[in-house]
Image 1: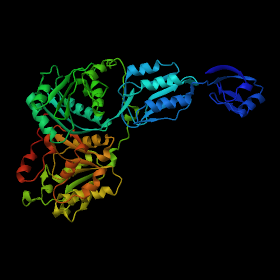
Image 2: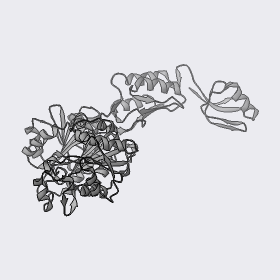
Image 3: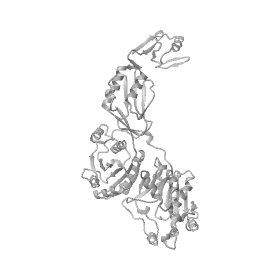
Image 4: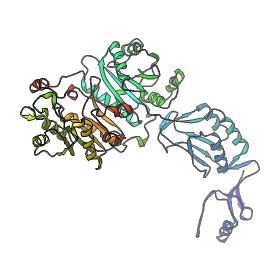
Length: 547
């Protein structure tokens, strides 16, 4: 390429190096000069300018950038149109960028005018994010240099993009003596927040003793709820392959693949598997939402990348996270739009015939002078539900009277004798015609459900980035309970239910949609069906468990 000052008479088809401002408008740098441009320059008293001119064997900046990008970039990314010698490469989905750093260095050593730069190796990015840029610095480069770069990029890609594949997760926490409930609850919330940001679901969560046998049993029980990946947060950090957590995995039929990580925080992480299910022994730092080695492993797993000893060793460079702000979450993954509590409606099922209670309607039975149905409704209201529907049937006038002066709407289900499904459909149909993004469905005969539970369920479901397609429910001692929040995406299926099965069929078909909320007592399981079940409630409180 020729470069330097040139008389206007010799500048036709040359490239303008510096922009020129004229009374009738600017001629931008990089412009290929035409006779019109030269006439304007001459009319303004300009006799010579600095230009660049391609020679035989040269490629213009845009042509060179376009040729290299198309030859080297993977098919699952988006390339910008070459302009001023630059092609930007963008992610098309959420995923990881992988970089062959040695070959990238070699490419950048071919010619100082050809540069390719990327975000960090294994950087997590969102759809549309800039992941690499190819820039031709001068106005042209030699065809031979372009050919050499393309040759270095042949075969395995220098950069590759791996989209994340969301999975369903189970969480097992172990408790050691003296461990506070709030630590376990906070760990579950942090795990859910981390998974939700990645489009994943926590479908099972349970707490057991810090013993290998208990972990073995918990893994077996949790797998029945369909997690694709199991997380285990030990009450005490894993210190050795013979510690309780790894021995529990082995007892469950698993194999320990690797223990330890050259990332700080995150050293004490265990990788294992049972059949085809990955099992991750979480480091203690994973109780915090701050970036740590567990995040790096999680991203690789979701990107379907092999996590072997070489991959783990490669994390050492840049693995001192306490000192280096490295590979943060993409900006668009922080503060994603969520629904509010106000967009969740409520339904209490209060239409049953109460046959096992004898002559008395269980919903009208009193505890401390308050009918059970009124206690249930008051807990829902005090917990934050603003649009609460009571579906009545059997003795509907008496049930409605027990709710007198409460801000609720009573709807009579004239098909209540056909089973619970008709009452579910009746209540959901009421909210289906409105703007609610989800509905909380509660049983009318659960007087020990407290406002704190309702508030926690509303808060937890509202925090989900995909709340309209999720099911939130409480869990105690590994058993799911009530009430249950259903996203609007399930309204049609709820309305279509028949008989007395409730939502069990929908659960079975949508395991990955379940969002579990650990709860510290068995109030979520206790309903009143018989006089014997009612009698002790007048003086007993919910049994405290291991949460």
